Length: 393
Ligand code: NIG
Ligand code: FE
Image 1 (cartoon, helix red, strand yellow):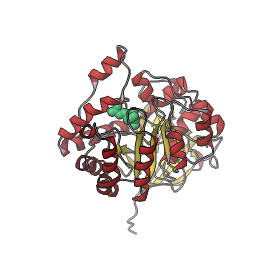
Image 2 (cartoon, rainbow, N blue to C red):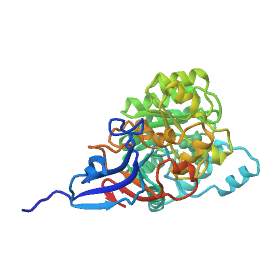
Image 3 (tube, protein in one colour):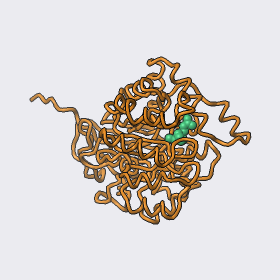
Image 4 (cartoon, rainbow, N blue to C red):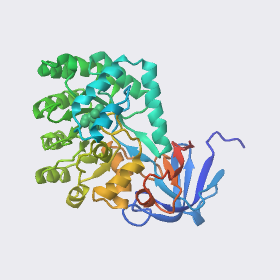
């Protein structure tokens, strides 16, 4: 008998598996000891105890390593050229971070060829995949002309489905004396050219970038073209970003470093995910966002890298987990959930961020007996095997 279906694979003897499905195992992470996962094509077909695994075409023995869902990195800026080593060096000698550095990357990105930008995105996606990231959102925002923003989105869309329009990153240097004119450009011709290539619309709502009214105009114009909002909110100081995100039904408010009690309450009462980006505080030597009050109030928290050449040049979700546990009041269980299921919530996806029948077959094995080692052994490359869409990469 011939069959055209893909061979099934069982991964057995996973010392401890995080499923993020409480109906499959213990606690909020749905932990299963000595687990097995069966992959059929690009999907998970079965999850349970190793001793009960059904017969499959292929078998892989995890050899007592831990298993986790692939990381969902819901916030990055990968379409860029150049780097900002000099700015980083200056910061580490005491100069504060300023959004003005974005202009350096805008100049380098505009000058780069399509091929160079594609190669850069591919490089950082591969780097992230090796560290267990199987879903990567990425943004425009270093073009700031109609043509350069549309080009950035076309390039991003060739590499990932999770593409965000961030034409409102800073006021373009070409409009330095006419910020209102730049907002008109973004909400009109730029969105017309960009919306077909993106799923999300984002704005940097912060002093030195866009104020609450400008941010509202950008997000509302994006929504009118079918994009779903997400907001760079409350990174450098208190401001209207979080409240605006909640009011407009944004999928996430990102950064959330400076929150009032009212901001925490608004997030907790809403479906807007608070996405914390510890790489940014690490690389800008800023105060850490505090996850504890958000979690205690019942807000959904995601962790993400914010990978970009200015404020957070890391593609490593394990690094972000370690920082969140050490400095942001998260337990290792909470941080691993936020880096997987939390990221999926921030992207409004139910097919990723969990290991359960029907989910996409995205998972990683760790050279460790449990997921806790991601925080307990910081800086150690523990991710030793990654399956992405059912394929061992
Ligand atoms: O998320 N805050 C705005 N955007 C980026 C930084 C971009 C840059 O410095 O190039 C961020 O941190
Ligand atoms: Fe960002």
